[in-house]
Length: 111
Image (cartoon, rainbow, N blue to C red; front, side, top):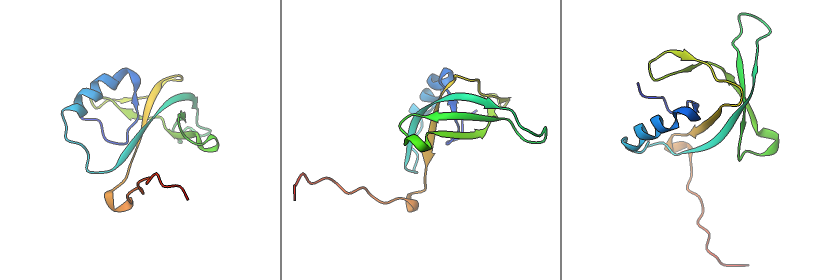
């Protein structure tokens, strides 16, 4: 089963995902991928609420480094799995082309 773009993939599965994407055409959507680490698992206050995983994203600004997501992932067999504390993950941000603008090339000129 193909992992969906934007999903968080544990480092133990990076080789499997890398092989899959190496054979696939590049996505038409601009994207960036950052490394992250699952810092902790947050139990819900109510049994009706989902468990959360807090992930520290490397390369993010200090005040915005942690994100919390529902701790439910789908493995290659379609089974639901959860992240463990300390797991190394990749966080991918993807946008449709119309939501982006080209970067300004650096000219090397000094004012």
